[in-house]
Length: 319
Ligand code: GLV
Ligand code: GLV
View 1 (cartoon, rainbow, N blue to C red):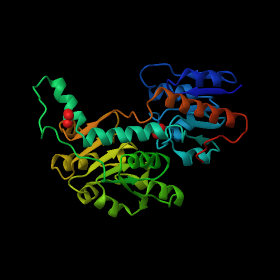
View 2 (cartoon, helix red, strand yellow; view 1 turned 90 degrees about the vertical axis):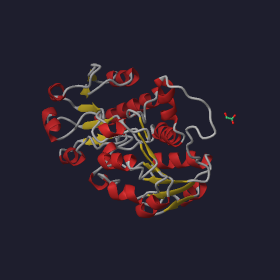
View 3 (tube, protein in one colour; view 1 turned 45 degrees about the vertical axis):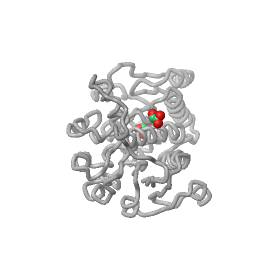
View 4 (cartoon, helix red, strand yellow; view 1 turned 120 degrees about the vertical axis):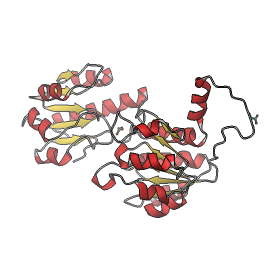
């Protein structure tokens, strides 16, 4: 029996699966676990199942102790984990790729529709109680058919977003560290370009790359200026990929037409300037937030944990 610490609320099925083999200490608070409480609880843990709101760094690994064998993140992004610090200590780090691909691509496409068709504005207008009526030029947005979607980061979620765009009759370009399978590229009709070209020709730019030092503020003032003034920026990846202050200025100055954001630079805070703008849609990090997807993520994290604790290769190792 090993000791497994779960740092936040996860679907019960995953807890039961872990509990069948191990002693499980799962944080049940509605609020996220405080840092002090977290450091206290992980002491003596063989496994930590972490949520993306918890920073897993040297301090936490040291607080856990040398018996710690696995950190299983319940997320595909793992910028909350200091992976080299895990590797140094012989700790396996894992994530949950695949299971949230469609849910996140759905949210990306939802934001594309919300932003381009001004649905957020329309919703706010009706709720405000102000009079409105149908008119030929009332709340006109822009169509997607025949427009170009530029995908930054063509991993699973980027490809799933491209598939949706294809169904909407869009042209697709992408920027990616590596070329994707040529058959998939042909099926999607997707052409690989560099970031500069992508920014200049896309009507919608959607971000699907991981966050790290290489992508910090990948989209800043200069990149926003390179976009068409009729273009939209969509971010369902990680907040700090975009310089939020620069985006606020670009939206305020109508340098771009609009934006749809599911993630923010300093969650849960949102740049106050964004809240005052009509041409941005803001949703609170809901990319993977479906019952089915969250359950699958937690089950995969449990499988990763159980595999490492029984000396097997986990399904989704990072290091
Ligand atoms: C969600 O943001 C994830 O990385 O899984
Ligand atoms: C719009 O509501 C239409 O009927 O064209």
